Image (tube, rainbow, N blue to C red; front, side, top):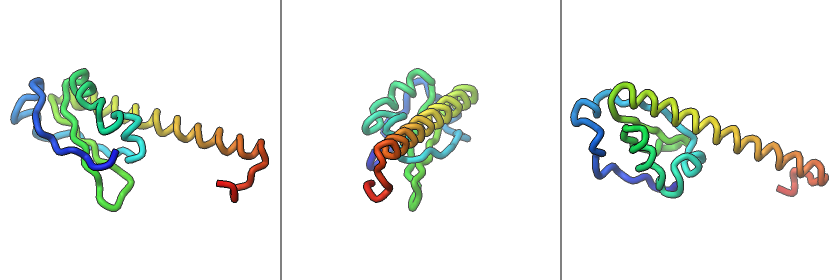
Length: 116
């Protein structure tokens, strides 16, 4: 997804300052961001609206991980964190299955690893 955009506005369903305290934080493999949030994070506004939470993505230096910070009321941020972690796991498994199928196809065609 390239560079991550800084937050410019706070959605109307997020109460300031109480919903901005004690956010839920977790890490996602950076390679999964496009699948989860769309190109350039285009799905983030929709996810925020549906989940009634506010998301912030922070690239971690020297890592292939991105930190996802979820702000909102207690139940909304917990639900949103669970949903996003589930999405990340689903996309991770899907990519892994694709790699396994590719390896099987290469084996079936008798292509060695030197052909990668």
